[in-house]
Image (cartoon, rainbow, N blue to C red; front, side, top):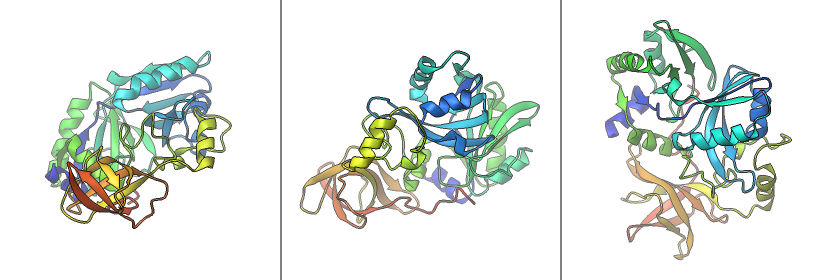
Length: 331
């Protein structure tokens, strides 16, 4: 895992994340319909752009899922939800879809392969795939006569691309990418490395930093909310929460000594009072220090000293703002 993490930061890594969900919303006014459901304002971008957004519960504002929406055109939106939440996202969309709008689960229609790292563009170019894309833009391309969507996205904090080939074409494309990656001193990577990479960036993971109990304002993902839109699921309750400013907030924690914080560890202030909980924790392979993302009391400030209870041992940590290492997604 450490070698895989380092490959992404220094050369290039390849991930098979085909477990991610895929769904399509089709029909006249599909973009307007999706925009009335999810938080981000789809009309702030134009095809062919991708956008991070949230599917929230109407009654509580809790996060059903966070996902990427691909704005194909006004009548078609391609969605990449998290694997475990795809069925629920599709169900909620289908329940609200007006006549003429079709919502389909397309899980076994596409694979998802992520090429991430400083040499990612070289890998795609060697296969004749497009790389001249703005961040969060995508292009409909072909490889060996098969369609593949190429998008300038990723979950590692490095420059990278995510490829959506057809399901049947995915194994052959994977093999070709493995060869091209290894020729450039990179390697295939697993989800362990993906987790350390995203934690170093402070990226939220559903079930940890986002959940039905942890709302977007708490997770500092309010930037993915179109507050000025007339409607989206959970708008009223989230606006009330934002105005009240009485909720816990996500912070980063950096270990002052040896130790690895883990999800669920209690966080205390200098007096020993409980002030929150770790939502994600790991050893940063880049910094060689323990790092964490934690949900903490509103009064906590950057630079505060806290203590994390790691299996009965106190680990001193300092409150900070992620990312823990520089981002290179715009390189």
